[in-house]
Amino acid sequence: MRRWNGWGDDAINYSVPVSAALFLEKQVGKGQPQHDIKLDQAISQVPKAKSLKHPLVLTDQLTRLLHARGQSFPNWVELRSGQIHSYPDGVAFPTTNEDVVNLIQYASKSRIQIIPYGGGTSVVGHIDPINTKSPVLTVDMTRMKRLIDLDTESLQATFGAGVTGADLEAQLRAHGFTLGHFPQSFEYSTLGGWVATRSCGQQSLRYGRIEKLFAGGQVITPLGELILPAFPASAAGPDLREMILGSEGRMGILTQICIRISPLPEREEFHAVFFPDFQHGVEAVRQILSSGLSLCMLRLSTENETITTLALAGHENLIGAMQRLLAIRGLGDSKCLLLLGFSGKSGLVRLNRNEALGITAKFNGIHVGKTFGAQWHKNRFRTPYLRNTLWEMGYGVDTLETATDWGNTQRMINEIESGLRGAISPSGDRIHIFTHLSHVYPSGSSIYTTYLFRLAADPSETLERWQKMKSAASQAIISTGGTISHQHGVGLDHLPYLAPEKGTLGLAAVSALCRQFDPKGIMNPGKLVA
Image 1 (cartoon, rainbow, N blue to C red):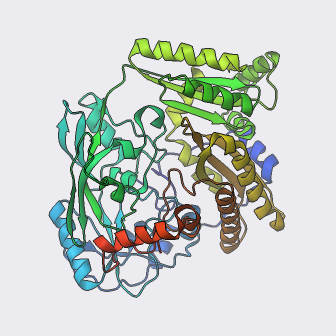
Image 2 (cartoon, rainbow, N blue to C red):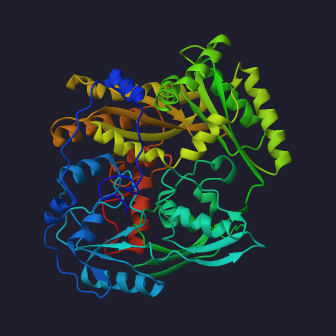
Image 3 (cartoon, rainbow, N blue to C red):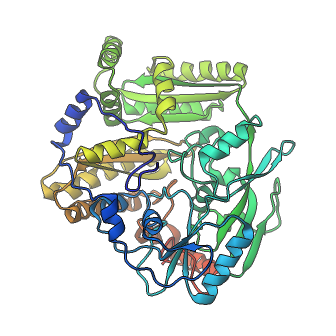
């Protein structure tokens, strides 16, 4: 059963070795476990719903609670403390396009606000209801998940927009294909959510971001149906798909999506290389990219993330032996870990692997084989469960991400981490920060930063500390010339920082586009643009 106030299946737990717990205590102090409310208490606090009379709409307290929040840090504080200040008044589960049309027409006629809902995995507030006098209807798309069409000649497939990543891949793999889109939320996030937030998967270096994989589809808007034909390419004016990519439900609800698929790779390998320091790793990554080699992933950790990864891995004897071996080879405490992924035909995998590892060797990289990479690949969708364990130990953990050009990468990392430390220092508490480059491009890289800190005794104080850290890091991103979001979208949390990136005219254009499809402003108000 899925957790109502945390991540994932409640039967799955991420255990932390004793040595790892001691490591975290050394970094930030002993955690302060919280008194989380129970589910029955949370249900009893759900207020009476505003009137919604439609045969597809459920208004019971449990269903409304389960659709009230996503997975952002503020969402966790609200859910676990019971301090939730807004709920949907009803939840609908459409199964056909006609159901969605009917619901939007009903909402438009009755001035009801609609929140499109996929897997509920948003970490920036996409699905949070805003306080309003109007009733709020959440439209859960997860029953629209079937494979509608598979074109093996054109390498395209059409799915219901509510299909989860795991279900989508299972259906494609049964026919020998893959989409290749693997965000960390893969098990629960949906195809529609990926398109609506411009998602990026862990193996985007080979398969591309969702904008490359999104070929076309169908959107139900308050003014009617928008069809996006799946052309191989077109010069017929602006691409209408770009209006829907990243639109966060402000213009309508995606019901069917055509995607570009690939044959399953014959071989897939993940290798690990350690460098003397971060800069050696950056130079190796850039050299690999400029060489034209085909890889599916390059993920480079900073010194602090490398230390943290090794500490949390457990297997003390194995990790200790590897550390001693690396020390003999001249790699000390400043070493940094690079994970390299290869997929495709076996011969090409061998060729690209040998060439890439040859480049890493030129920058003093030490290849330690496939064990580390295989473990990462095996556990990559289990990692979010660590948030549950850390919370129960009394620690809060959050992430933020951006992207910038190569010449600005190190400065951006420094400014983000400095901003986070400065924001928490007045409280007298400590913070543990670690960063990696998760998606790389010829011109630059994404930057993914995780920060861990002790929860305060009062949930309001915890939330206040988080808000200061989030604001400081976001300001650092803006002032240093990065995008406010590389892969998580805008939602509520990034909305205050969008203007410097889009400009006044740009924001006005986005707002006008939303009004064109949704003149009454009923579609997910308060998200993306004010």
